[in-house]
Image 1 (cartoon, rainbow, N blue to C red):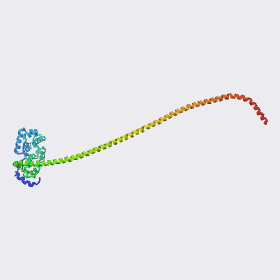
Image 2: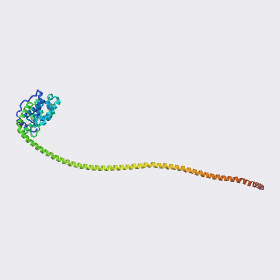
Image 3: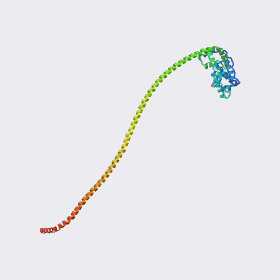
Image 4: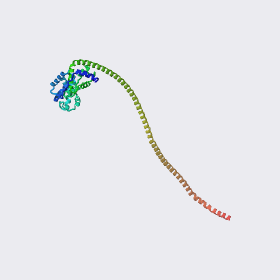
Length: 367
């Protein structure tokens, strides 16, 4: 908080003397749960209202265990709709009592006594208690150093300009606790309750004006937020339109690309099919050529054989004819010879003898 020293004098003047001694740690821990309930009820309320609400709870429920198992709605109906922050306090009561029971299986704060002093506040806050209720229990049950400050007290101090405007509840609590020593924290608490009781009427008026201011600021903030949201929505709409146009272009491009790809695939397929067909034709031609060659060879062989046979036949025939002719010729010659020889012999014999004589005569003459 800003300007702490300047505000410290004003605050001490408003709260008055704190007193010297605070309460010691209570001996009977059975009183701790009633004090805890009172601490929750007292926040942003008066002691009279808190006592009335506590009495109503005691009359409605058999014991605090019965209060623990009751729904928050029933506690809210028991406290009353008009009680300050009745709905939030009903839920806090139910949640905190259940948390204590789940921790210890009984309705008691005895287990916190064994904890280190620094751990107590943190643990009580973890149970679900507000900062005011935590300070109240630390002060009244365990006799520790704490000054309970609720939102009403913070508003009163702000109204009387004893704290910096816009300070948070946590900052104001720290500020008041620093002013009070460990011996006079309880005195500071009592002084703050007296101050609250005196300022109650003015606080109600100030709260109204404060609330009006808060509402005005909230309305301004809301208008700003709406304007910002509108601008954001327009930007988003423009961005969306751009994105849609881009997406449409991309889609069209993708379509064209897909078309081109499909055509490419078709062409490639066609080319592959043609290639396969050509290869098949080529492959089909080879065995045909081979078959033709084989068939030609076979036919040639057959023709050769047929020709050979025919040639042989013709040769045989011609040979037979020739032999027949030659035989006939030979036979004729033989017959002729056979007929002519004896004729010649007979014709020649008488002619030979005189020839010899003539030869002999001619030989003799020569001699």
